[in-house]
Length: 253
Length: 328
Image 1: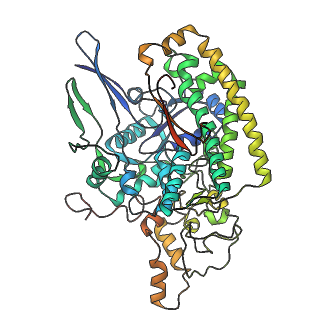
Image 2 (image 1 turned 120 degrees about the vertical axis):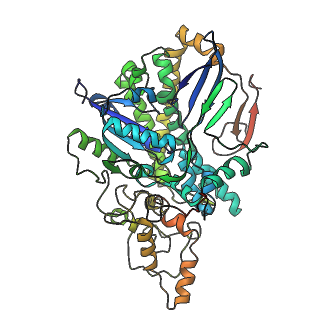
Image 3 (image 1 turned 180 degrees about the vertical axis):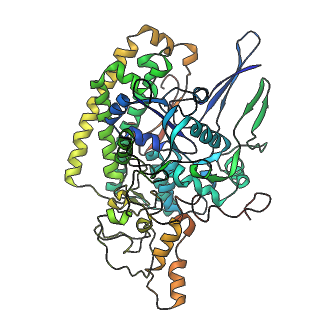
């Protein structure tokens, strides 16, 4: 059968290709998602000091190193049977929440938006973040860059480094914050809420008001009903750092 | 340069994590300047160009290729050769391409033991047929292929001719920008140079106060609450600062954590791990050989400590293999 390869797949973190086989009529007979990468963290973490997992495992993914840093830090808590003091937990949660803002900005504007803001039929050379900026204008582009940057500044302030942070320790964190830093974080948090609302409005205006995009998103090929899983606090509100796992069905029940 | 006068740029990731990509995103508003002066022809994380588009380019079509990631698979090596052929200037960008980095710790093992752990033994694996990766797999519709997973991780410079080395895990954005400015100004140092870093060590950039080191006991990071104004090494925490090239601004010590050495060997050093080992042994405060042996003997995982980022590029390179390609 004729094979069409999409190699590499782009605008995501990690390596992959898609092999599509076409039958004699030229229709898709089958498609395979192929992952051509492995580094072997599962093996080479063996023999390393457990408290150094907070330095080693973030290198699994440099787009979301904060997630690996927090997961390994919490694993260290469990290994050493230590419960961090409330302040340390709050600093970790603050750090992780800042990451949530920065990461979702990357996902929405850099990885996803080219498909929606420019459309799937846009020329290949334009279908990227720079094309998005050309379309929405430098003013909005700068707003996106600045908002993401301020969230990254909080990650750096708390975590030591903006990429591959280093402050997590078994039972706590390695650095406190000053009152001045707390004020900066609060001011940034308020700005990020405004930015979130702005992004939602942009999505409504650019995507939801465009019938062609909405028809595409809701078409069979782009729709996959799934269950949803996330962590919630004691009030059943979403919490990205800690809590109980809650699962809801495709209808949200 | 393109006919429009813009620099033709390519960015690639081999065996890497994507942190080098985010370091480029961290150029922030300067990305808009890059957009004005350069055309980015290839950048999988952000741009939809494919391998076939690179293959179709004339040789030396790309002005500068920033290549991050180590060489772990045959695909990584193929892309290293392809991008060398298509690029006037090839930069080993970031610690993986420069010295092997964290993925280089794979050189403590061999392919078979990595496969067995990942695909058979890991607690989350369910693989009753004990299937391990094959480079060719027959499916009803034809064949699908994956690259060969090498026994040994190599750096970019060990498989291709590299023009410049830009260290860091990841490189700090202000350093990347300095290098981009130098490229645009045509003001690059001699081929083979380390760029985007300093000619000093991390200690020279560190704000913690240094005094004479006399170490009776080395502490793991969770065993001590250090004085946040004093040198961490002075307090018995192994810090790679004295053996590591500066350029990051000593970020990790700023949050009271030791340097692990991601900027690679300090200037004029060949082997970062040996240099750090030498720094450690010179501060041991022992009256007898037995006491010295006890103090250094308490250091857990010396190779993963001294060679955290540089094992493939070090004199050790890897753990010895027997004739069958297994760890001897």
